[in-house]
Image (cartoon, rainbow, N blue to C red; front, side, top):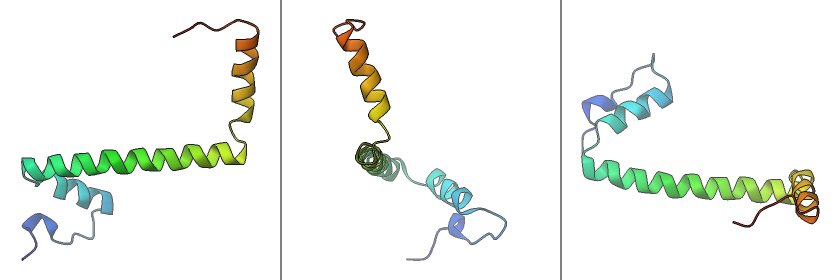
Length: 78
């Protein structure tokens, strides 16, 4: 399959600009597939980042602050 005209290499465009151009050229069905894939990819990346922050102790101070406020009854039930 030959690359689409929008896939032509343009050295003045960044990689992101090239990807944006390709996305704009996608048919509706393929755009929908890409959107679903990216939402899953982004959610998994976010989960890994949070897990790494928890494991490193980066969130400990925030957690302690929240627990302290809860113990002082400064929180409300959802």
